[in-house]
Length: 187
Image 1 (tube, helix red, strand yellow):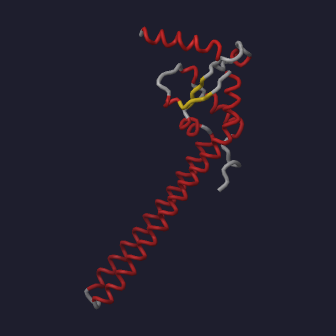
Image 2 (cartoon, helix red, strand yellow; image 1 turned 45 degrees about the vertical axis):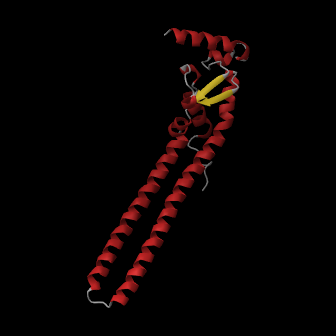
Image 3 (cartoon, helix red, strand yellow; image 1 turned 30 degrees about the vertical axis):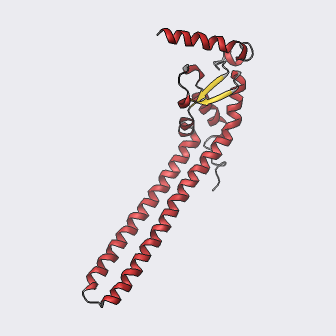
């Protein structure tokens, strides 16, 4: 416990010359005054209206792709079964030709479906980039109000006071500024 008191005293002393201006109106309404703020970017995205919309869209698109994959799989199983049943009546070379064609078809379908899954992931990443670009000015404003010089990823910080975590405030401000961001993420 003693080390925490020491750390807290050190942080308070550090905040003196680097902590920015004297308490302001921002501090009076609850914005922490600190040269360093923390944020949980995954939570920032996931709990924002924008992130929730993107998650719902990607979940729906994934469900469609999964259903398509199951349908294709059932069709291929039936086609393979039919080919296997016909094998006894066919010449080996004729069967080999059909089997090779079937294998090529399966490989092409796999490539196509994998490309669809990659495109889905890329759209998710593009949405995240659009969100972060829209969030930067809002986060910069939070920094100014707090007298901060930097915002660090909370998971990368060994120890900090919860008061330096601005994730909740950032989510609220981002929701107010961009809503679900429908107009920001164009595919």
